Amino acid sequence: MRNFTLLSPEFQDLERLQPVHEFDGFDGTGHNRSPSLQWHGAPEGTRSFALTLYDPDAPTGSGFWHWILFDIDSSVTELAAGAGSADATHLGASGTQAINDYGTTGYGGPCPPKGLPAHRYIFTVHALGVPKLELPANVPNAVVRFLIHQNTLAMATLTGLYNR
Image (cartoon, rainbow, N blue to C red):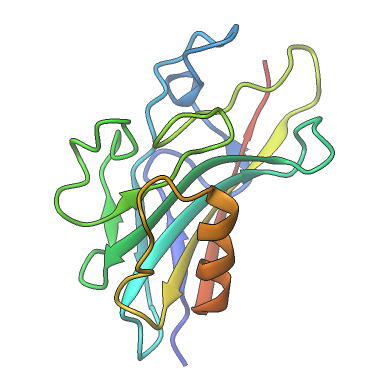
């Protein structure tokens, strides 16, 4: 059996994300740059990937979705730093970004309220059994996440911590 794993050269599991990853809006002063990510060991039958970034500690009552990327070709096993930019410059031809809970397209970095303990930022790569989710433009991210979960063969997670 293969071990499906998600790694980053920029941080280890349960280690602090870097200030460059912090959101650049509200009172955040980062560069809103998504970290480099790599995954290995996807199960047989994987036809595409999806990636999500979720903060379960956000004071919203339901967490906060920072990034939803889907329809990543099955040949892709890494994303370069900055791949989550709103203009998708570094994504190439593979992947579609949904609107995050900031109301923007692409990666929205951590920006927890100042003075609180570190929040968990859970990056999850999903190995999907379909080549595409076949979604129209601007579909709500909850619908994207529903279809991701409906088609997931396996998941791998990597958690970064961040506080201000």
